[in-house]
Length: 619
Image (cartoon, rainbow, N blue to C red; front, side, top):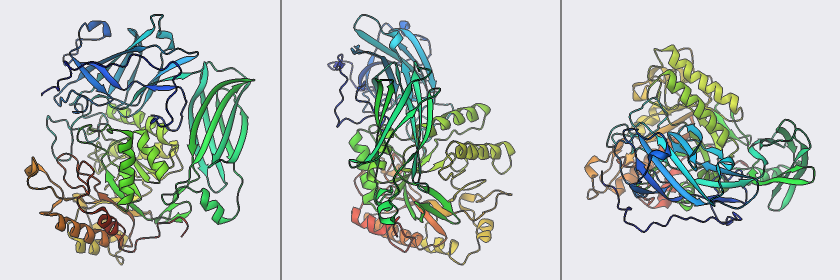
């Protein structure tokens, strides 16, 4: 594999950080739900080396660094400056910077490192983290020295052949094949510094309750926590209008309170405060941590008044039936792989999805950058969050997924845009659900664990087929003929007959002893209509579930298919495959560079065709 020539490029490693850590308000904060003013990115050029034989076990083993890499882009990506998609189990990073001046603690944050990471600061070992999709934070204060500079060294291990770890769409073969894509190793989300006090807010959680017109607020303190005398002040507001301003005593370093909002009483006034894709009203939050008359910490956050639930056979948003029009979103870019090229690229994706007539996305086999969820919150887009799968069932795989999924829910539970959790997809990682009790118990356990960690959202136990316990019965069906879909899921069909006779993908829809119990039925993968220009490189390798020879045919087939699905009363929502072309998969409505394959107005008209259900929370 060819390495891009960064070795002879002028090295511009930023060595100085602003001593006040004053980040611009326009900067894309990597953790939008818990923001402080004093933070600074460490993205940029780092020293880099592969260690395929695993000989180096600590930073002192390195005397030379053969490459430089553009963090946070993975070494497999061209944007990183490495562009090597070969098999590499270990890699190393190093970066020096001027130590920021200030009081209190200095925290080092990693958005995500795939898959296992160890961190040293000034050659002092700090900690290890496992899990390729979740953040971790380290207090590095004790490792600072008097030299005025700080050195951070990171070792990342990601065995490309290990199928027992959550890996999503990352291929285990040398070249991407079928529906799998290039691997992502090492650092692939933002690395950043943050200055905090000796005592600070470690985490926040928001839990809206529209029925009681309250906001649940949970917080945990970190650092040196006084035994008593600590207070938290919380102010909630919308467009400058203060909804609540309260002060609470903190005991044992944790707090859990219900913040009552003034109930406007009239539905029209309540609806103005409810969050939905049509009206994404966010509630700004200012939180201060005090010890007697001393301000210990101050952060900004946000929440929303929004409920999701299941009522018989319908999905409910804010107490009203809501028809889901989702699109499958893989979250890849050609030059940057799973890492977004910029914050603006994430916003643009959300805007494109909405412009195409969809009200949500199913983030497929990927835990997305928190900034995507931020833009979904701000602009109004529903998100199904899906756990990246492992592909083998082993005790280690179960342990890894359970740990990482728990961390994921903790990271994202406060985002109002997330309306469903999906721990499994198409029996990946549990290939013998029908025959093997342990596989069934695993799916059941993850379903109930998810419901325990977050009882406020629906959980789809196994999206696609072979359902056990689930809040939504999700079907994958890539039938090419709209009339056959219309016949298969027609209005007069008996549900029991559907589950006995229809087996898309050759799989049964529900396992024995887990019959349909009236849950909503949704078509959560269908379509996959492909088109790629014949003169494109590797056009002969591009594929989809159905191919078109020209753009007019694609437009016609999409319109016919969506009109059919929108008029099927059995379904309370759908998810079309897919948003963009993704490497060899050419079945996107957009090309991989986000250019529409046919006019976006025509895509929108087709997406919204048919009857469907009311998609407004005020209907």
